[in-house]
Image (tube, rainbow, N blue to C red):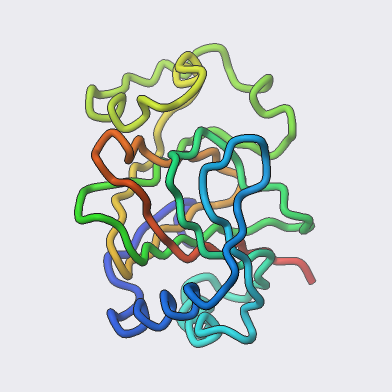
Length: 199
C-alpha cells in the first residue's frame, strides 16, 4: 500500500523536463479561478501531450487510475491551506506534482494530517491539534491566513521541491505551499495531475 503522501527525488529526466516546458510555453496561459490571482493553472488534454509518456511509470506507482485534471501550475503567490478533493469525480485518488522549474532555493509543499472532504472542512477541524510547530515550520507557513488555523492543523510531511522529482498526496488531505516569496522565489512551475479511480 502506498503512503498517503510521499516524494521521490528523481522521476523524470532533464530532457523530459525540457519537452514539458516547451509544450507548456506553446499553450495559451490560463489564470486561476477565484478573486485572488495566484498562479497560471493551464489545463490540457493528457492524450495529446508529452505527459502521456509518463503514464506507464505513474501506473507502476499508483496502479490503475484516470486523470481528472492535467495542468501546468505556474505559481507567483503562495497557496493557502486548501483541498483538491472537489474536481467533479466520484472517487478522488492522488494529486501528483512534478516540479519543473524554479529559482535554485529550497521550497516545499506542506501536507497536513487533517482532511478536506467537505465544503465545510474549516468548521469541522478540531479546536486544537496540539501540534508543536518548529520555528522553521512557522517560517514556511508565515503566509497562511488566518494564522490561527494552524493551531487546528498538524503537519504530516513537508516535502522539498526537486526539479524532475515527484510529490504526491491523497486528495482528501489539506495542504499548502510554503511562503516561497519570502525566500526570494518569484515563481515556480510544476506539472500537476489530479487522479481518480472512477469506473
